[in-house]
Image (tube, rainbow, N blue to C red; front, top):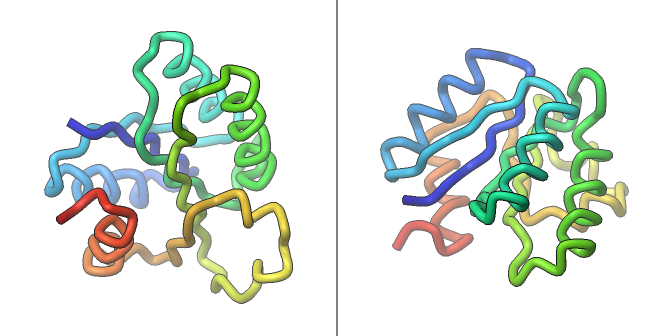
Length: 131
């Protein structure tokens, strides 16, 4: 079973992604802010049960998604992980609003809110998670 970390401060968004990913046989952990996301991610590396996918909201309480992305990539480098986790950034703003943000080059894609099952399935297929 594939494992995802869903990071979003909106409970409805977390529930939608949980239900949607369950359709594709994923298990999900959740964090409602950046600090909890980093703790969950770090623990997954320590316990040798890494996430296959992180869906990360850009605007979060405590630590914003852009900084969480940067720190996750640093964790991976320090732990010398075999394969970096796939990270999809998400926002209610369009992807074009972030096109000049070089930090987002460290992620693997973008999901615009409100989430849509067909778009999520398409992203997962392009990333090789669904055949």
